[in-house]
Image (cartoon, rainbow, N blue to C red; front, side, top):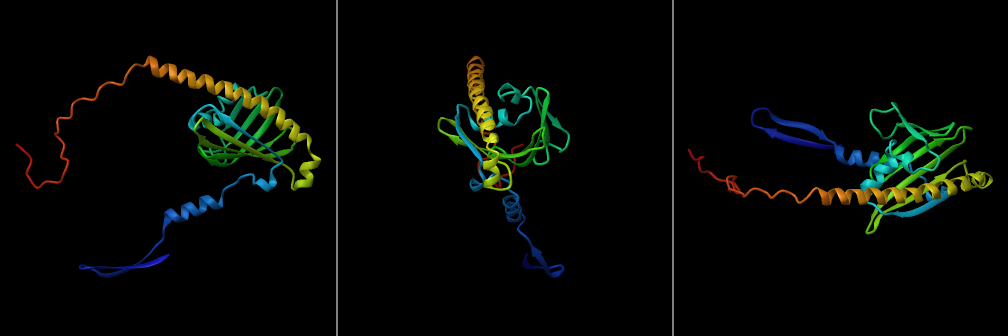
Length: 216
């Protein structure tokens, strides 16, 4: 903290301490990031999705929309484990008779989110879903890891095959769904007609300071 002293006519000198809460908040946010680092990646995939960033984020994170594109997912139930969707939220991702438990460990809309997924047999998988703007839409980078080290990830190579099959199917379907959503938005914008014209400015608001009294 930084010491400060102010002098006031009525009470004299006052000593105090100042702490930059904005900088402290930014430092804490960086410290608590949870992402799958490049050195720990067991499986990664990158895809250019044909939709703006905000729309992609919505379709990837909204439990009600995920069954529209995720392979094998029949429903996603968001449990009341947090006040709002974000760090601490837990989902039950239902695949037929199987249920996967998803815990959100990091949540940075619309930059990325990190999930810890527990499979029905207790196996745990960590995944970071990162997104960024692209002139042609949104670039999605998905990175996954499992086990405690590279040797364990190699021994459990079947996980890599499962992810490749599931994600290739799901991302292809997401591409289709996003194209449909973008086309629907464009159609709605056309049918809505032009924006109404703004009324003429009557110059009744002051544009510069004045000392003149208001008109009667």
